Image (cartoon, rainbow, N blue to C red):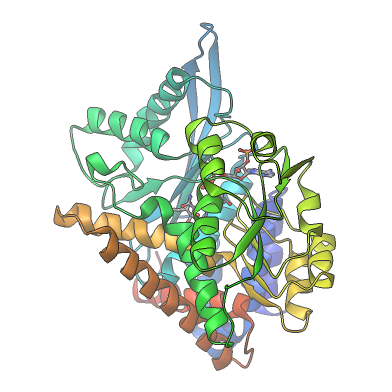
Amino acid sequence: MTYVERVLENLKARNPGEKEFHQAATEILLTLEPVINAHPEYEKAALLERFTEPERTVLFRVPWVDDNGVVRVNKGYRVQFNSAIGPYKGGLRFHPSVNLSVIKFLGLEQILKNSLTGLPIGGGKGGSDFDPKGKSDREIMAFCQSFMTELYRHIGADTDVPAGDIGVGAREVGYLFGQYKRLRNEHVGVLTGRGLSYGGSLIRKEATGYGLVYMLDEAMKTRGDSLQGKTVIVSGSGNVAIYACEKAQQLGAKVVAMYDSNGYIYDPNGIDLSVVKQIKEVERARIKEYAERVPSATYTEGCKGIWTIPCDVALPCATQNEIDGESAKTLVANGVKYVGEGANMPSTLEAIEVFQKANGVVFLPAKAANAGGVATSALEMAQSSGRLYWSAEEVDAKLKTIMVNIYRNIDNAAKKYGFEGNYVMGANIAGFEKVADAMMAHGIV
Ligand code: NDP
Ligand code: 2IT
């Protein structure tokens, strides 16, 4: 057994039942073999054992009172995974499916993603099994205040800077920030994705979706191709999906389908994004409404069918494991040419294998393709520290440059080790090299 294989076996044995964490670790570790072989000193320093063990894991109780006066109790998490290259940085997810395994897979991914941005941010992730769906504004506020009443003692602008993820958007960040400020008496950049009136950055809201499409556009350009006239599927209809759709449309693509966790809409005329924004951002209603408002559209209950719609480009932007091996095969059979992951780990290991083996399919993995969100969070941190604001044009230009650079770096890293076009390897290796170097420099810590 190689060093990498031993670490993976041990990780599975020592973290039993954490299937999402095992999945992310498997994908990452197995691709690092060439780097590990080139650096025998890493094994002596137990670098991979340390890399896959969070520096700190905070688990806490989140009690709150609902609108009927009933006391509710949720679980709170913050995994401070790796601070070798900067303060812990990563989002908070509020969703009933959240557990330690989910937060650890997201945290592990975040380390390499944040490294790829080229900016000084370490990896962390947190959240709760709280379900924001159907809750009143007061309930959301009560929950966020209780969550922060424990979390505030573990975070800080130079220590750990959370942000949004599934179920955590501008509203939640606002309540979390308000409580942090009250408890610490400090108005600092301790959270990103803040509102524009209290320290947020222009373009942060759009950044993940826009960044995904900037990278896709670059990958297409280098192949003499473009989004003009392409048929695109964007899964999800939340923050990442909406702004991926917006940028793809601006670049001439036709987005024909989107979904939420209940079912998908198909609009052969191309999705009218203003209707989606009204339903999702303003009314917080279900995507089903779209088909009731737009005559050319149909709604189908259930999500999986979306991947049977023929498309040139698939942009999964909802959640982990939304594309399995079977859906991947269907996409390939229907002629998909580009898959860009907006969500974290949206493709199963089987699906990745299908895309990688298919002739001529370009697969842009999450930790590279969705790094625009956290990169712009780091730009928000820079603006907070400098007590200044950049214009939308400035931030957008920086985001675009960052995404193009990430694409070039993962492309080069794949080539360097003889795996041209394998961006899973390229992203893992390019992200890992910097973190490994910093960890070695710090000694055994
Ligand atoms: P949102 O909460 O804004 O939107 C999530 C969307 O995904 C909703 O449409 C939701 O539907 C759907 N969804 C969630 N779970 C499921 C499921 N099990 N099956 C089908 N659909 C589902 O989250 P974001 O847009 O912020 O995040 C989406 C993905 O992008 C996540 O994987 C996140 O980790 C990743 N990401 C987010 C970044 C950001 O900056 N926000 C940055 C990088 C990655 P419903 O409303 O029905 O639940
Ligand atoms: O998965 C992610 O990169 C995010 N949810 C964004 C994290 C951040 O700190 O902006």
